Length: 302
Ligand SMILES: NC(=O)CC(=O)C(=O)O
Image (cartoon, rainbow, N blue to C red; front, side, top):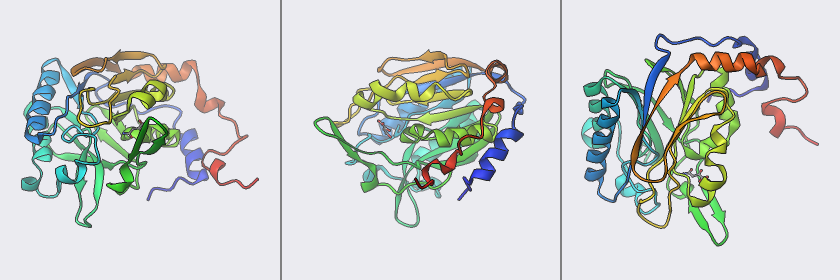
């Protein structure tokens, strides 16, 4: 597991006052806010079609929602899980690889229930490059266990084991940090990605009506880099009512593009030079004081 020790984090911050730029600094991103049904084949066909629509609109990076091939419901995760190690046993994995290659794009493949050799299930995001190869795999680190009396009760940890690493990947469209839904509530993860030179953090997510209204947008707006979230649309199966509102936020905190709750493809332009510009206007890295310690906050005894 990657060390989050105090010393490592502080020295990374001071080393990264100027951000490395990728070859491509301006491009279009597509967010496929998909309707998800209890028919997996239909979900696959639907996702393929939607990715192709985004690519036709010029998107060279396409992001899918959390659980795009399976309803976001504890009744379905086990039944829909696939083993990504064998192409034949994972039609979802194969489809994403094919469509990335066919359209020569990078895909942040939302998330899908993954079955591993150890018999456990993970909520996993696969990232594919334009050659169709898998570039990274992120398993949701912070599982969504919640009990809101009179409202919603959901326990992902009844089905999934949690991932235990941050995931940051160099792609043709910049350095991308990955988080899945509840991971967005942990600024530590976003700070780590920023310190390691991320230009963009992608969060496939499926917030619900209560948590969505309260926090979905706010959680995206204070990172001084690009943030993209992609949700299923609201008509998903079961009692979990999805918030929607897939969004792209720029480094100043401004919303560049967003959607309602219906099925749609959001296309937005990303320009990484805006990151450096924003950090010169508000130089947080230079302004950070030594009066607190980032990771230690949780460890200090009174
Ligand atoms: N799917 C989730 O992880 C939902 C979540 O985090 C929320 O707050 O809602």
